[in-house]
Image (tube, rainbow, N blue to C red):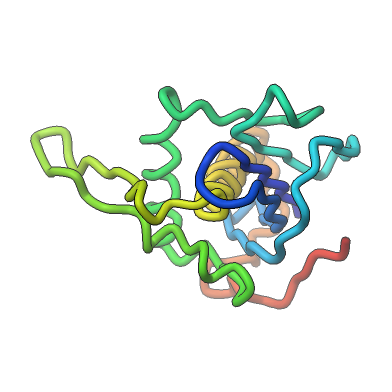
Length: 165
């Protein structure tokens, strides 16, 4: 399992840090808890730190740039959500991105999604970024042939696992 640590500060509301876990071989994600935002990080081979504030957060592994990454982040979240790969704990439900993602238009290039800036908070973006980071981890894991947990099927997504901090 890989720990996810999403730290977001550039949107509405207080800066936030959301922690979760992912199983890279299956793409399953569980977003578990809110922690105080902190720019200091510990080096850990099993943690992906993703942030929208790379100039503030130290030792990040994945930096979000709205102009370059927003479409990919939204599409990744929607695909994983539709496939039942995301579990959001009750404490984080108020930041469920489903409440802020809207279809702008549908054209020959497909559906164009956007975020509703009126209700968008740092927590929504942190969940989106955590799911995006988990997708990147899954892609790398699968490319490296690290499919040791073939028994972890999407139907078994919500087997008990938790993060101890």
